[in-house]
Every structure is written in C-alpha cells, then in structure tokens.
View: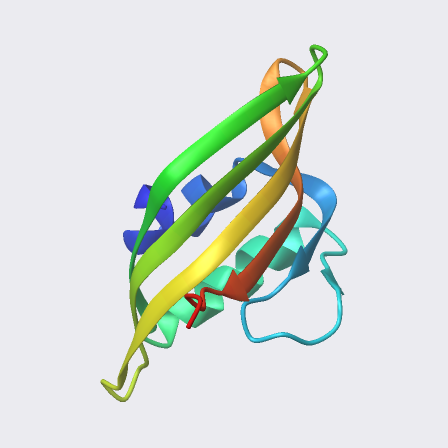
Length: 119
C-alpha cells in the first residue's frame, strides 16, 4: 500500500499478475483486468483526478502452499479522500491469492469485504 498511498501506479502494479481478478469492497460482480497497462493507466487516471489514499494493513497472515502459491489475509484500515475533499473511512477484510512468476510473487485474485463486528 505504500505505492498506492503515494499515488504511484507503476509501483502498485508491479505486484499484479496479468489478468488478475477482484471482488471490490463495495460488493458487485467480479472485476477483471484485461492488461496490466490498461489497469496502470486507469489507476493513474484516478490518482490524477485527485483521489488520495491512506490505507494500511493489519494482522496480515500469509500461508505458502508448495513453492509457487500463497494466500494472504489481512484487515485494511484508513481513509479514501475523494477529489472534492470528502473523506471515507475504510475498514475492510482482505484476502488474496498469489503465484510466484519469474521469481516474483504476483497477485492473481483479491477479495475485499466490509468488516462488521459481531453484535
């Protein structure tokens, strides 16, 4: 998230696999990315419009399966600031599937959902 918080689309995309998929934090259908270049350009456009992030992971756990796959889980907290200055608090659960490609861990799928504490 350091690259994401800094508005660095190139740094952020470095750990994404071509064609990775996402379930976003607002619900909805599965999203996919046709190419890393398209995703990078889309994310840079969001940064250029003035969207700001201050996101941090908590309680991260990683389990490696064999030598080429892993699953990570964590909580994401912080803020998203819209270009008009509106600040949204973020409290999400996050899980991700990773594969090792060319000696580098790449994210192939991620899933966000709101954190709701038991009543």
